[in-house]
Image (cartoon, rainbow, N blue to C red):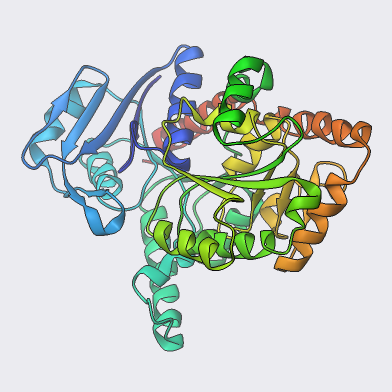
Length: 395
């Protein structure tokens, strides 16, 4: 099968959508499919094509953390896409290139599948910074209508979790919705993938001893990730008694605000901000940590949670439907709802016997084996085939 993956974000960008697309691309190619990627680049009136990846012209928006805006009307690229002789189009974003994917599918008479990666209603604060209630309600209604419109311009939707499928059904979407959790190349995050001396060197470079308990966050530093709750909670941890540190890997619009918060809580020496790191370096940070934390409630699946578990890091997280099969209390991690509860759970875990903590590490790794990228590729390919067959019968 010849497949076109359309997205507004792609490597070298680092985010959950890119991780999902690259994993899917490689998994499908391993199954023998021909995969083309149609993305963008921050260059106006310029297009690049290397035979597998077509990058449309776009404009980088600095105020949106480097998001590249692409016109959905690029008729000159249709000829190039037509020559790919695609069997199906898979849209991974809703705007720019995502709209373009839907236009191209209609023009070339091709079936279209989309994956709903982002819960846009959790990002309305970027448009409504003052959190005006009536504006918030209006924006959420708009999100529901737009999501319904974009989804039903295709022939099937892939939801990464039951939580996401339920949300989409609540929007009134009636086309087929398939639940397929995004897969991962679990081998990348297996602790054996990093040399012990590399782990020790990284920990030493951050000033940690062998017995320092390192809690890690990886992700975009933005309001919806609720990192301030984690930092506040860490201020309640008896850091000297437990020899605990918090490492925050990533960048984003809240970078300076969060660093200022850590400073105001006298945590300059206990919370380490590394900034953005290349994706190839990220597994080493997981392998150098003893646990992972995220207070986000906006995940459609929670890829960093899965990465952490694969790296044998027990989780600290707030209760969320999307985590029900990942965070098993006292087995693979802990739930918390307040900063003080986070601190209490950290102390509880650190004071456990080493045998119990090691058992949790093994349980964490075992919990995510179902997310193997090969099964992910097979499941998506089955949706493609069913959609192509249905489209032939009911174009």
